[in-house]
Image (cartoon, one colour):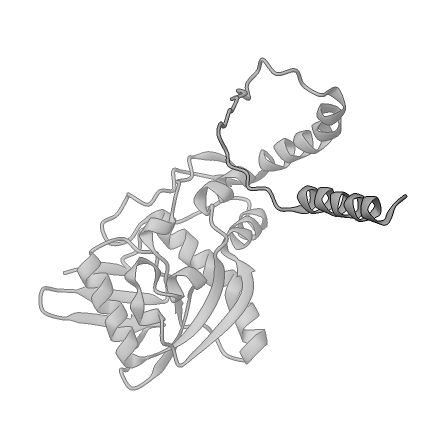
Length: 253
């Protein structure tokens, strides 16, 4: 092949190679979509259904297992500043959490406090099943104990007075309020503003949930690594019959 023809051939090949390698710009000109409804008209996959069935049956049996009995309706609306359900939840929380705290620190919790809005269901008279615990406490709240100064305890009391609501308080509290003052006893001992106190609550409330800001800056915080819902189930399983009453732990003159 003559030299001139060779050069033309080489240039032609290089031109083709350059054109084939250059970046092309693309633009979306049309988008189409199709909606497929997920409903009973879709055929089930037998293999998947058969695999899930034993686990589904086990879960249903577990959630409906009877773990205790209620001799009456236990609800959060049967009192003005306290309730049978709030009292029960605060007391059982203290009862099962204090041994954990004592083992951890060698100290005892002074009292427990939670929030009215955290109670999401009541307990009807009759058989109590696992489902009740999940209905009562659908959240993954963990117990914490905070050491509060006397000043923070005073803020806690003012929060209760202002809220005028049946927040769950354990039986270790006796709080009487009037239009101008309050009288507080903790474990039958008059409140001492110069002391610090150990209060059981949840991680949600300790972070300032429900505007309980007095919990946010404790002298010290202790994590018990115990879920409130697990505690409820454990307590329900430990007693034949759930009992709770209004006993005047928070009242107004």
